[in-house]
Length: 388
Picture 1 (cartoon, rainbow, N blue to C red):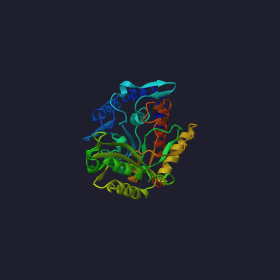
Picture 2 (picture 1 turned 45 degrees about the horizontal axis):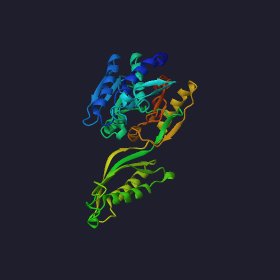
Picture 3 (picture 1 turned 90 degrees about the vertical axis):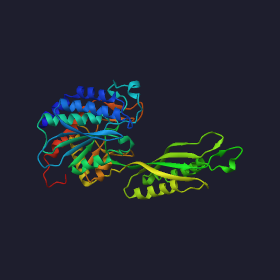
Picture 4 (picture 1 turned 120 degrees about the vertical axis):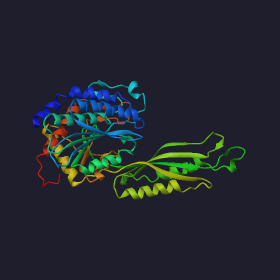
């Protein structure tokens, strides 16, 4: 079975590119439920063609979760393959910048983050389905709102992770070719400030500026950044005011909080909350809302063991892979928080995520599919006395 699975995946490079082209050319911004679900429709056709069982977990506001299963031994815990179908790009981007291949690299919206990860997960499922399965069931979970913190998918991911033996999250491999073994946690917050409007010339003293209050908050928020500790605060969006000659009655901002250690989460959230809810401009008021949150990904003995098996597989093909720390967040943090061993960034190699010049290394499609498939096969050799 080992040779058959690997040899078949080696032969699928063209088919993988065709599927990748199809789904890259579908707009699927996190808030475009119809578009994100259209990507799922294309994946369903693939699973139907390969005789793979699948079902849909309905989600009201964002993309539904698609779950595909290749059956394994009775009573054995599943191996989980994860990926998200949404991108950060606005509607119309796929028409303006469709999928293309130039000089060994593929381009297009989501061509690295993370539509090729969906492709290799789908083909890995197809390979095992074609050649007799695996002692563990293999579950592919394809969600639809990761780029905004997985507000609708988080509990679905955690539920699947708790049942799993271990997991691979097929976010893009790093430009170096390495994978991700550590990620920061992130909290995405919104702060609203209310003031009192007044004509800024005739009745300035009657006004209470929400913009002034927000400006003071932003300075205090950014002062919380501690690079040595791995804590960063970024106010990435601001809005407010009515006109240049009106004292602003409203202002708001969106805040990105990142931290490395689990123990720092409570500290930094409390500090941000204090700044957002307390005011220094008399007559203003403010409140804070959490819009989304990712857990950090930190290595465990079990995830380190999985990482070592994966690296040994890659080395057997002459590829040296190391683990990298990423300041970016991902669904792998939810999997780790569920107590399930996971490695991340095992998708095809790419770079410039979230940018118009985002790219993917074409020959890494079948390569990274092989590495995961071979690692899954190695797991069948592990005895019940090992940690994995």
